Structures are given as C-alpha cells and as structure tokens.
Length: 549
Image (cartoon, rainbow, N blue to C red; front, top):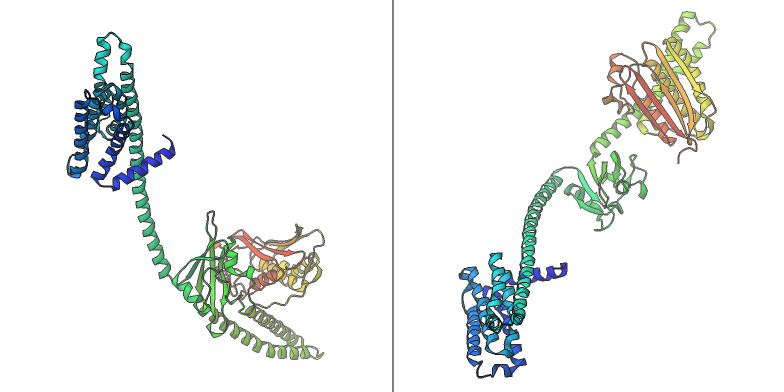
C-alpha cells in the first residue's frame, strides 16, 4: 500500500472512530447493499424466474435482517465481535442469490465486501483467513458438487479461483490492517512522547520566564538582524522612556553614548548591533539617554548557537558606580591641579637658589634632593590628571619607533646597572610608523621602569622591537617576581598594584600601566601581559604602522 493510500485509510479510520457505532456499521454495510441494488437494476429478468423466487426471497429476507440489525441494535453496548454477524449474514444472502439462478452466479463476486469487513475486523487472523477462504467455497458448493458429479472437475475452477481470490484479498487487507495498527501504535507512542516533551518545555519556559523577570539585570534576546525576540521586565523599564516601535532593532531610536558620556555611538559601534553579528562583549560601559535621567549600563553579550544566530545581551545598571567614579576622578583632578601650582612655584624658587654660586655644597645637596622630590610630585600630579580624565593627547607624525626604543633603553641603562639588572636591546631595523614618539617613549619608559623595579634580585631585562604584517611589536621581558593569574587581568586598572609589590614596599601608585594602555589604544594598538609567578613577565606593545583607524 502506497503512502497516499495509507493516508486515505488513516483518515477513514479517524472518521469512523469519531462516528457512532451504528453509523460505522451502516457504512460498512452500505457497499454490499448498493452493489446488490445495482445488480438488480442491471438485470431485472434474472430475479423474475419463478424457479429462483424462493431462494431470491430468502436472500432478500436475510439481507434485510442484516440491514435492520446493523441500524437497530445498540452495538456500543454489545461485544464488539458480535457485529461480524452482519457480514456473515451478507455472505449467506449472497450465497442464496448466487444459487437461485444460473444468471445470478456472478453475484458471488460481491462477497468481496463482507470478506473485507471480516478480514479487517476479526481479532484472530487465522479465523479471518479461514472464513475468507471457506465462505466462497460454501457459496459455490452446489456448483462444485454438480461439476464433480458429472465428472467435469474443470467446471469447479471458477469456484476455486473465487475462493483463492478472496483469500488473497483477505491476506492483503489483514497485512495492511496490521501495518496500520503498528503505525498507529507508534504514532500513539510518539504523541505521548511529544506531550511529555511539550509539558517539560512549558515547565522550562515558565521557569525561564520567572528567572528573567526576577533578575535586576535588563536582558534582551535579538536575532541576527538586531530585532528583539524576547525581553525581560527590567530591560523594558530601562527603555520605556523612549517609546520604541515593536518589530524594530532595539537600539534604533535609543540615545547611546560611549563611556565618556559625550561621544554618540555610531550604529556599527552600538552593542546590540555588534552582539547580533556574533561579537562577544564583556562588561563594556555605555550611557543610555542624556541629562539627569541618563543611565550607565555595563553590557555583556553571548552569541546564540544555531542556524538562526542572534545573541543574548545583558544590561546591568551601574549608574551609581559610574557617578561615584566620576566624583572620584573630579576629586583627583582638583587635588592634582592644586598640587601643580605650588609645586611649580617650589621648583622655580629652588632653581633660582641653585643658580647661586655662594651656595654651600651641603645646602646644594639638600636642595637637589628637594628639587628631585618636587619634580617627582609634579610628574605624579600630571599622571593623576591624565588618568582621571582618560584624555592623553596624541600628536601623530611619521616616526621611527625603533629609534625611540633604543633611546629609552639607553636612558634606562644607568638605572638597570644600579639595580644589578642586565639590559639587552634587540632592535635590528628602523620601525617607521605613524605615531607620537613622545607618548610611545612614555610607554617604553613605564615598561622598562617596572621591569627593573620588579626584578629585585637582578636578572635580565630584554627589550625587542620587530615589524610584521603591518604591525610593530615592542616586547619587554623580565625575569623578576611575576604576577599571579588572578591579578593579571587587573594590572591595567588605575591605582592597582599587585600584592607582591605591596609586600615588597616597591614604590609606585599604580598609574603607569593604565596610562600606557590608554596611549596604546589611542594609537589603534594595545598592551598585553603574560606572566608567571617567580618566572617573570612579558609586556607587549602593538602599534599599527598606518596609525589609528
């Protein structure tokens, strides 16, 4: 049986299952009644033979009893196999008709309808096949007896052929019915599994919805085009003042600004757009809105695996922290500015005193110490101003970074010798780039100074410069105390100092690496750190030859 035929049978079975018991039985009986009526209308003379009348009347009575029983009996309250009495009565009626007259012998072929009914409905396959084979033999028994009585066994061929044919039909119906039963059983099992999965999915969905609504972080899921798929309550609260259209990218009409709260974010720089394209974001700060109602948000995102793509983006409100950091930065700027004015006056007067030829050597020595200390404080105040404003002025020009590296190495050589550190420089060729030589030198000074300071037991500091694939790399490697892994990610934070540095009383305030990292980023490059405790550290400065994009 083909797939289309199986589908038709399944639809018929579903219809019969929804119909009442009497309706189903009437439908089973209907083909036999229609076929008998058509035969009667096609050859009315065959029924008018006086010799055939008793058997014809008997067959009509039996067929009528079968029809009345099919329509009148309460089959839904009777044993289900009792209904097979109806097709058996049909076989009896057809047998009587077939044997009533020689002209009606072909009506035995109509036995196919009750045989199909029996083959499809009888529980026992053996009995179904037995009835399907013996019923046509019984119907044609007079013809069989007559053929053998006259010594013409060949006349029995049609009877045997009919029995074999109906047996084959019964086998086919039985096989198809068995296959359908198996498929129906599998479908029921699949439906049960699908129901269980649906219930589990609904339970998981409710749990996920409860979690999303309970957290204090704004969460939005977007597709690969940046269109929102799902949001939670907190995210809707964050964007509610902006009256976003429903089926548009979430950040289409938002006022988004960079961390400085002044620079508007271009569409390709906006976090939701970048997250939708698969970029991973970790704790990036942006500002939503402007004025007193603006909010600082820490953004993190993770891409969604699968053919549809998209991402889940989380927004944590860090406005209080950002305002506190800004207040701290303003305090640092104010204090640093107040330091610079008196320190400039102190240095000016010390310079004037040191120009005096009558100054005693002991006094000159003391004034030199005071001058160096004041200069150090002035440098610290300058660093504090730069670190608090995130503004390090960069003046780009065509410069030889290799020459800058070599010059800063020579300037640090005396400090290295005093600390018992061996300084090795490996710069084999000019390293031309569009860069600010003063700021690049500041970065190298900071890296060399740290490498020497954090090698208290001597050792070797190696400075390398190289050019590869349009990038200049400057590597500073030391063999000092190293940095623990849990502190390595924080070395570029302002005012951060490692626990080992604090225990060793090594001077510093934790601004050099932060400023160096900003300078590298302003050049379009970066500053990276690799380190192992007790084995030293490697800081790598990367600069694009063409300058920042």
